[in-house]
Length: 312
Figure (cartoon, rainbow, N blue to C red):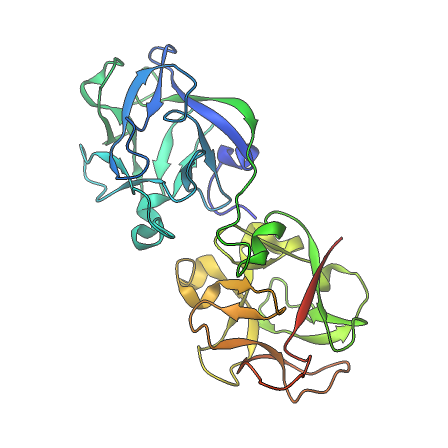
C-alpha cells in the first residue's frame, strides 16, 4: 500500500536515521522542536529522539518519538525551509502533498507536491545547525542533496486513542470485516478491487475480494490492490450513500476525511467525514448481495451496523 514513495517503501514500519551523503557524521534533526514545531536542521549524529524517523505508506516522514510530528514545506520554490508540524492531532493533513516524500535510488528525497524540489542542506555544507531547505536537483556529483537511510529498529505504530480508534491495532495487517449479525458474512469488494464500484455483503470465502488492510491515516484498503491505494470510500457523505472501491490517488481524496474511518468499542466503523454516519448493510438483511452504505447509528440492538475485524 505504497503511494509514490519510491525506495521509502522498504522502510515503512522501521525506525531510521537520515544521514547526509556529504558527510556521514551528520543527520537530519528536529532541534528539539517535536512538540512546538520549527525548522529542520542537520546535526552531528547522536541517535537520540531528535534524529530518529519512520515513514508511512503515503510518504509522511514522521518523528518516531511523536507520531503527530511530520516534516513538511510551506511551498516548493527553491530555498523554502523544511519544517516540522509540531504536536497537533493529525498535524500532517492540512499540508497535503507538501508533507509527503519520495526516496529515489540515488538517495534524493523529493516532494510529492513538486518532484523537482528535494531535500538539501542550505549553503551546501553539512555542519551542526545547518538549515534544511528544498532545492532543485543538482546532478550526480552533488552530495548535499543526497541521503542514506540507516535502520535502527522496528517502529510500532501507536494507537491514537484505543477507546475510539481500534483500527490502529490493525495498521499494516490483513483482515476481514465480519458482520456481527452473522459472522459467516463479510464485506466484499465484488471483484472491484481495481476497477472501482460498490462493495457488498457476501458469504465468507477468504479470497482477495474480502481481505483488507488499513494505513495509519485510517484508509481501509483492499489488501491485494493496496499499492494502487484502492480504498473503501462513500460516494458522498450522506445517509444511504453507497460505499465503493475508489482509487484515492486519482480522485484527489487522499487527504479528505470522507476517505478515512475509525473503529469504536461498539464495533461501529465510523466515517471521519461525519462521525454520526457508520458502515451499514443496506436494508438490514444479512445475505449475499446487499450493498454497503453509510447510515446513522441505530439505538436498537441491531447488528447489521456492527463489525468484527479478524486478522488473516
